[in-house]
Length: 214
Image 1 (spheres, rainbow, N blue to C red):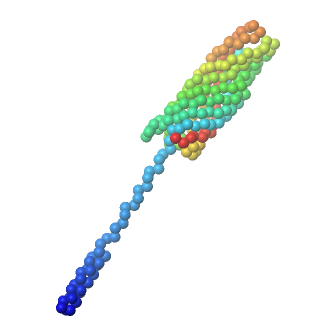
Image 2: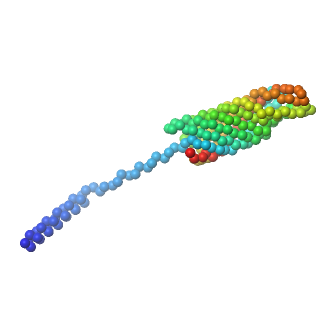
Image 3: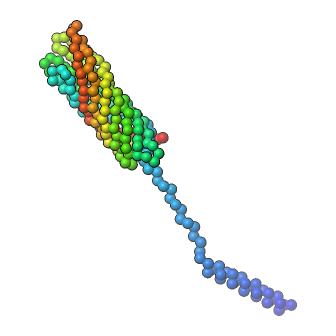
């Protein structure tokens, strides 16, 4: 009986050793490497607010007067970029302090503020945005005639232009912008006499904006 017990124990040991040896010969299992989540590309969608400054030069029909000067102010708007598309649409408004004037022969024309509300349509190259813009322009207009006094109007016209914008970070962008504005003709009164004067301008602006998360 002891002999049978010894033989049984030996058989169990032999089977255990054989199983361990077979397991050692199997290839080791390695988990599949984790796939990194794709990094989302930059999106222009969201509201923004910025500051800007630039230079304006224009023309009138008043004796060769061509108003020119500096402009500084702020702008705010909202962009929407379509999913999986480079197309960006938006709306923007700005308001600026202006130091624009010119005079000739006792007549002076000047503008002390201006602004516009424009629709924008752009094409994005990742962090770069090329855009066109157009809409309503408005400005303060003053005309002074020596010896006859002065008169002022709030002129309303149209504007069109475009620019290039670069998103330096997810929240900060810089841009260069050109626009042309035509304010039409307004009637001015000087000591009972009346006259009509038109005004148009070209403007180049540079700005920096903060885009809020969306």
